[in-house]
Length: 459
Image (spheres, rainbow, N blue to C red):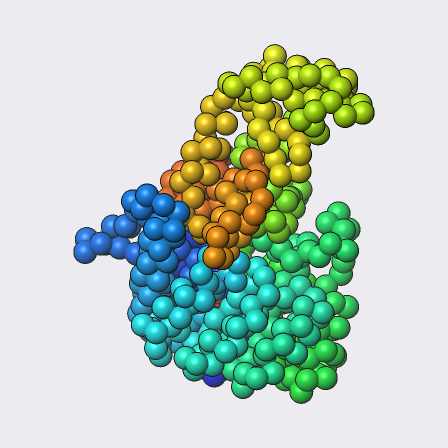
């Protein structure tokens, strides 16, 4: 299939940030004849000795740290693009993946593309509505691949912006919002507990594209792709038109994958249901992650939650004194009993949320939350955890939400350490298949080339 101007295998490596999809992994994927995708979300860069440069922030204000973050992101993106280009040996295609909701996405994207002309062939982008993606890609002569989860989202993008840069629309990535790893595009009218079959949704997207004269533009199916034999009725199906497949989870378990050996061992032992959708992310989106102590703590934090008032109103008549300053909150009688029970268990620090509730955490966790909020470097365009926003006031206008977490911190730690229990571990919902797939028996970890060759057999 022709993707980004060259005939390649219709196999796309899914982009995974932070620093999970690297120049090495994507370069070898391209060398194998497919489309390699490195993450442009705060990618790693290296010193003269080849050691990873730690992303340490020295600015005193959030705005100063935000500028440092942009510098790190551009330098890392350029570094990984060049590595991917070298590793590919001129084969396949190299794409860069960015998130529209990451802070100053446009600045980072343009900064990387400006310094990598002729090296990057395409840009994939999701997590939001990237209206200016086509305009930016066209300016640098690269193809663009918006990630959507419905035909409705693509229609909005096309009518508002993409019709003006149609010649550089390389494809549309349909990401299944119930099965994909990382952040998911579930809408408010879709039930996270009731997955829908992807075929009708993708067919609806194709019919929408045909209305715009895009019948031969590839759709890239992402989320839930494991064996290609499972998708046999999609391939060469005239109803669907050109279909390629994106794999994000299976490339985690390759020799070139930069994740820790501890993370790889966990992938081999997951059971069905160990990856669940949750809504703890500071982006406000649903996301799919491995259930571990990190997720369990967030779930417990949310469950230890009561509505409060600052004056006695109706049923909120029981005075509750909590926290180091001895502030008084008014709770219902039942919630006051629950709160006292949590305090006896050691969760004696109530923290206010933007929804006029209190969550109860330990003193150590409260200090960690406040320290992380104070250290914010503005990694998202809007962050509910720290209330940072990329706008004139640098604020969402809401209270910081202690029910969430610093996503930059935890993703940096998990990719650069063996800590897989206390950090966020994204994965697709099909990750449990590592344990039953005979390809991985006896703990076998393939090279990227071996994985691509295996995929081409249907397995």
